[in-house]
Image (tube, rainbow, N blue to C red; front, side, top):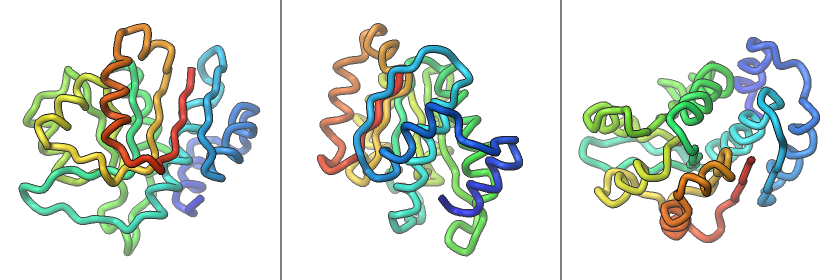
Amino acid sequence: LPSYAVSGLRAAGASALRPLQAQVLPLALAGCDVLCLAPGTGIGKTLALLLPALAHIEEQKSQSSSKGSQASPVAVVIAPTREVAQRIQEEASSKVFKDSKSSRYPDGLVSVCIHSSVSKQEVNRSLAWNPPLIVATPGRLVGLVADRAVMLQRVTFFAVAEADLVLAAGYRCDVASLSGRIRPDRQGLGFS
């Protein structure tokens, strides 16, 4: 992991891996697809999703944004609800990407949280940064892909948080549609 991620995690009080992370991260960072079923909250699932996403972002050449261009993320995380998407976004911003300003990322890494409560104008402003990570609810992301505001061909990391809730909410077709637009050599993670 890059030093900025390690320092961000330490600053947030994360000094050791949680048991779930100790099992998931070696597989995920080695590029394996992972399905993790773990009950409860506060056990480290979110960081176990975000750290492999960061590894994919670091492996790809950064792309600058030009006005009128489509957002072209490296990593996409699907969440069942606005609240889950916002929680994942907050972890990304406050811990994983917090100190990412460098010569490679002069403005630091950004991630965008997209859900139905965010206005179209705000979404478009956020996408103009060409974020390497998009955290979104499935229906909203399907709409942005259909509108050609987001291009998924560059995605090498695709994760579904709270996958059981995503499926229970009836988003199976949306997830399949998104997955079908992402390159076949991607890494996939599912957490429930």
